[in-house]
Structures are given as structure tokens and as C-alpha cells.
Image 1 (tube, rainbow, N blue to C red):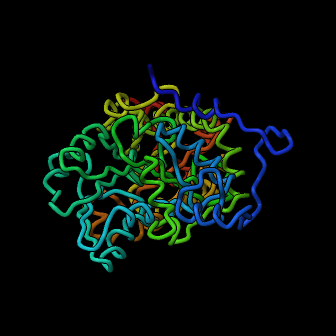
Image 2 (cartoon, helix red, strand yellow; image 1 turned 180 degrees about the horizontal axis):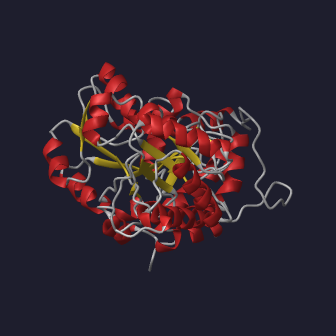
Length: 410
């Protein structure tokens, strides 16, 4: 039977304390015990259903975690105050001094900076590889490797990870495969393809309203228990705890994720086809020209499309900046980082979300100065949006009038 993540979310039914259709928000930082023995048992991790302190867990956070685990098809999940809070805690939980990570070279700039610049302080090293080359991935693994890390759809180049292939490699060497699924919620289900751990920045598509930050680690009950352990759990001790009010807000927004992802995907597909037909260098997994188009098709849950992210290359950072400024002026979206908002967001990754990556390494990755990353919004009239974007590009001479438009023949 096909895995249907939205059905799993829909099938969760919670009642508030007074019968509300939304679960009651646990607005407490600490919780009382009826006996000292029960408090001791909870500290030892032996008292199911009891709450200790909100940095450890809270009812609101557990509701959201349960829904996200259902979406990803994992045993359970632990939410964090940010996507980086989730990523850093699980990496530090799985790696110790002397250990090694193999990571995709094209990942979110913050994750790259953490692995490149921060973890070496703790004698944890990382080898960055072309994640689409399974032979290169396997050759980078050493006897000290503990984690293989990638993004389902990479930020910002939209490379596609062969999760099944990577899972086989990870299992062969008994290492954990962690997949960041932020760009492709519902569209791709990494755990069903063999990932051991799935992480998200909830800030993006899952929350969808650009009003909060959050993260989640989805995995086995054993892993989540380790993360929450009061003695040596990275999530507990590093303190990247999500506020209960925010957890409740994200849970509400999660209910409409399937509708939003379908619209994001439909709009992105329309624009990608138009941009490519205009002669722009366009990267979108839904295009036949994308080198991993057929791989994505084999992995995807079809009803949610190819996602809301696309890139175009306009030749130079000067062109990119002028175009983004003009599009913002024409109310076509915002010159802003992040993604998943109801309005289109656009940025030049080389000088923003991937600026932590040195210029020479950006060049090796294929991250050009003129690259613009689009998070396509929920526009009701995407044809109008395209026409207005096209006018902006013509006005700036990024696109030139075609001979047939001028009544000329070649």
C-alpha cells in the first residue's frame, strides 16, 4: 500500500481539556508530582505520561512531535526551537570526539558552517562530497565515520539525493543516514526510503506563515529517548527547546500543509516551464532537463508534486540584485531569505543563505553569482505572476525580445 503522509496527519485526533477541537496548550515551564517517588522515577526515565520540565518535554511539544512522526512514518519525533537546534543536537548526539561525518557539499549554509567550522573544535571532522555520486560517497567513508548527512532536495542547487542508494551504503558500513527534508515535506518520505533520521526546519513549508522558527528530529524511540536523556541527551542539555505556544501554532498550520504543497508545486512547475521556454537557465526537479528528474519521480508521493523551490541564473549578481529589487517593487514577492511563505521569496544564495561557504567552494559546487533561488508562493493567478516577472526581466534586458515578437524571421 502506498504511503500517504497527509492521511496520517489527518487521522490524528486530539481534544482540548474542555472538549476543544484543538488540544489545550500546556503553558507551564514545570510540572507538579503527587509523590517524591514519581519525581525520582521521571528523572530516571521510568514514568510514562509524567512531565518533568518543559526543556525536557511538554504536552504541546509531544502533540506536534507525534504529528510530524506520523507524517514521516517514524516511531516518534522531538521538536526543537529551530531547524539548526534539531540538526546540531542530533549530530552531536551521534558523534563523539574523533568521529567523522560524510556530508553532501550542497547543504544549507548554517549546516555547512556547523560541520566545517564548529564541530572541528570537538575533533569531529567532515568530508564534503557530491551526494549524487554514490561511488564518491562510499570512497569518503572511513572506519571513524558515524553519520552520512544529506538533504532530499539540496539547498540551493536543488540536487536530488538517491536516498535508497545512500541507505544501502549507510547500512553496509553501519552508519546513520540523516536526511534533511525541509525542501520536500510530503513530496518525499525519506524514512520510507531507508533514512534512519529525518530532520526539518519547521520554519519553512511546514509552518508556512514565516512567523516562527522551529525544528524536528524524526527517528526511533531509542534515538529520541537518548536526545531527551537528562544526563547526556543533546536536546535536553543544549536547551534548544520549542515554546509550547509555538508548538501549538505549528500544529494548526500542519493541518493545511497538503493543500499548500500542492499549490506551491503547481505554481513552481508553471513558472519553471515558462522560464525555461524563455531561454533562462532554470533548475526545477519537475523539468525533464533536471538531471535527477526521473530519480525524484521514483521517490516522490505524486500528489504533492515537485515542490515549491526553483532557481534561475541571470548571469551576474548585478542582474540578480536589480531583478529582485524590481520584483519586490512590483509586489511580486519579497527579497528575503527562507522559504515556504504564502508570498514568493527570492534571494541570491551566494551572498545570503550560502554565504558561509567560501567563494572558491561555491564555484566548485556550481553556485554562480547570478543564481536566484525562488520559493514560489500560493499565488491564485500564476499566469499573471509570470507575465509580470517576464516584464521585469525584459525591462532589465535579462530577456530580449524574440525575433518573431518583432515580426522578423531568421
